[in-house]
Image (cartoon, rainbow, N blue to C red):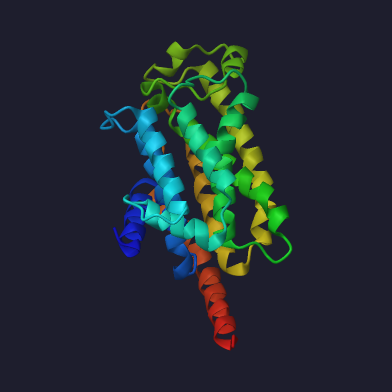
Length: 299
């Protein structure tokens, strides 16, 4: 597996499974895109071990083997793997913290045994590894402004949390089919919702109220993430502005559908996705040109 081929596999994974963020990634300078694809591709690869129906091997053992191959690759051994060459190259190129990678793998392992979360604090602890660290792994690639590196970490975490909570609201029925409920148990009790309600073909009034409450939490994470956009270098801002709008758009569509997430998967219409992309394309192009002019003046 050559490095170029590994990056291409990661790009295809991103294009297939992460359409909203993949579209936003097109607003980055070309040289940065493959590194975002590598992080997404690694995360998706691990997620497929946990969730893919075709995965018949022992999932815990498969995750352990992935962790061992990753450690060996980071130590300099050749990676006999599809996504690891690109991911390890990106980790090394940007100094991505191993603690974030390890936290992500711990949350993937949790999905093998933990299927319910008693409180939102418990769910946040899981999302710290499954989502917040994705934001902080992306941060060095996106490049905070000089001197803003530490300050930018919290908004990056918040954006990861916002994205994942949005996914949980969209995918209630799919997650239930996998035996998982990510809506906190104490929130279910508070709104009088049973797990049987999650299996119905239509959303009950009580479940609608619960989903609206959780959507409000997601909105809070989106708001907390907004200040971080201005902490990035100009060439990265249009991408994250678009991603923020596209994922926030999923919440908009869920609300417009009356929180009917049990019968179908709510999506942002293509015309709206393209409109968001076009709205940020001019700023992205200008920022990329400015970046190239600076690079051309370097000795």
